[in-house]
Length: 162
Image 1 (spheres, rainbow, N blue to C red):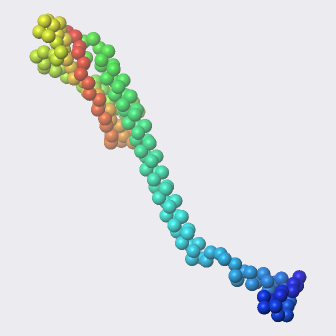
Image 2 (cartoon, helix red, strand yellow):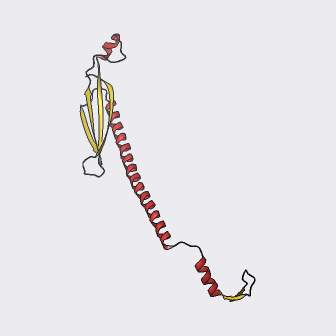
């Protein structure tokens, strides 16, 4: 298709083919150069790499938090089992659950008088034995490997002296 183009100066019109018009548009159209596209890809890849690294750290932290919460539940359960005893429990007990192992220690405290008790009440406190309890839970990231993490839960309880 041939069009007549009138120059802005008002001179004679000339014939321009569709092909030459397309060729002129391609040379004058605004676009991105290859260098600009490559720079954009480099910046994008650096950003994506950083985000993936951060995601990996977050997943590791989430797994550690889950493991720590489970260790706290195990320690609380074992501490409550010790507190349910009427008399002074064994001095040491232990157990395992999957990647988690726990040790419970009970030590009788040597105390002259208990805080908050009057001298009139001392006859009642002679039958009580204050004990410090400690439950330590250790765990590893993989089954069968040495524990790499641990947490402790401490408490004091009064038991009846046998």
